[in-house]
Length: 284
Image 1 (cartoon, rainbow, N blue to C red):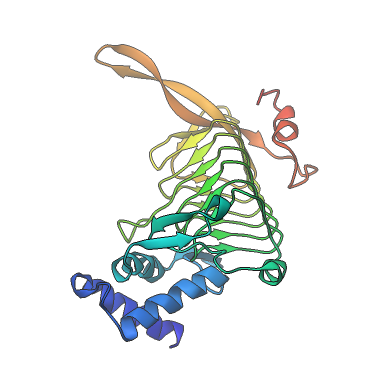
Image 2: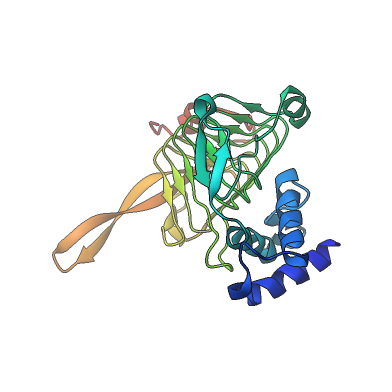
């Protein structure tokens, strides 16, 4: 099936999804399985950047959702010490041997969990971490210890997700936007990015930054604060902040994110978080 035919078949199945189940055979099952394989291999991705900006292929998300209807729960091999899980989605590494790992070209240390349907590009390093189905992790990106890459999240090339980072996933509603980190983004320890937020290329998010679709992002580099939501401009350096808000009980500080500057042109894309913030006299 061509990609166009796959999309048409999956869209039609989605519209009639109440009739899709574990006993479904034929073109619908074949189309969903083909879509998952294309996501797994990186041939297709849920979102991609073109000349006009980012395009989200919602039919691929629908394929992921339909796969849950098509699959019964079962024992999933590949757990620590030869154990098994009880789930609907197999491990990406099920049945892999040395030759398959060498061909894939990335590192996966003990404790790294990737579900089938997620793409991990060559040069990636996976510390003990979790990458969910539909996600895309670009070349030479570091996914550090206990970091999580949610379903359909799009992580660019040369990114660094520090320890404990949480990148949110999105499946339902089917039209919701995935989290997107463009190339060269550095995300500090315990930072959280969810609800379809997009982080522009080579931006730096300081430790503990929390970005949701409703988080106010305040650029404080000019004479007056400039507020936005849902998007971090390229090369921005962002730290956690608060701003006052009045409630019936009084005025309190509520969380926000502060853009405190831009990465300098001389700063290497793989610079540590400490070095990226040093120019602004901000502690990590």
